[in-house]
Image 1 (tube, rainbow, N blue to C red):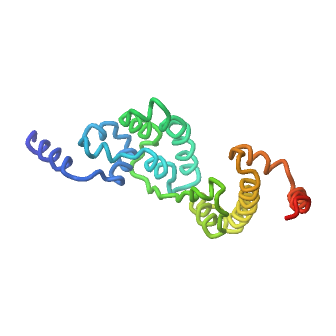
Image 2 (cartoon, rainbow, N blue to C red; image 1 turned 180 degrees about the vertical axis):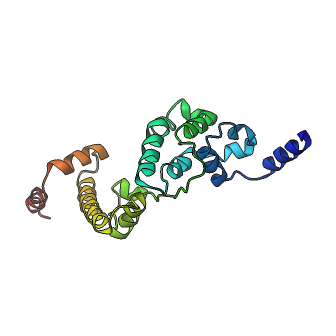
Length: 195
């Protein structure tokens, strides 16, 4: 029996880091999984990728809500900040704690909005945002997704305009300004400035 265990451990060490095996281990709350990885495999561990996968589960609404809230409260808020980001085993343990522990779940990747869009360097496209919200909220009706998408694209376009108009403003200040001014005020500003 001991020889079989040694052979299994040696076999485990010979494989590359498997993201999907790691996700399944988190689903099982396998806290010892980290210690079974080789140093090379541990170096390939990316907590941000794990967070993105683990927070999304294809299941009933209650289970979806649990994963989003649990991963956010237990792991996401702390996992990438100092000094926790210097301790990958602690990050692994936080991810395991955030899972329900009921066995393997189907997790899907939720695409991120492109950095140029989130940094207000480029206008968002309806297709990109629609895809993002459709994957983020798979149980929401298409009509509501379309409405949310249209509003996001409209607001993001205004923010890009404000970022170009006021290039020295911080993104948070642009967010605030976007909510304080109206479309009419933007049009009036353009007329007054000769644009």
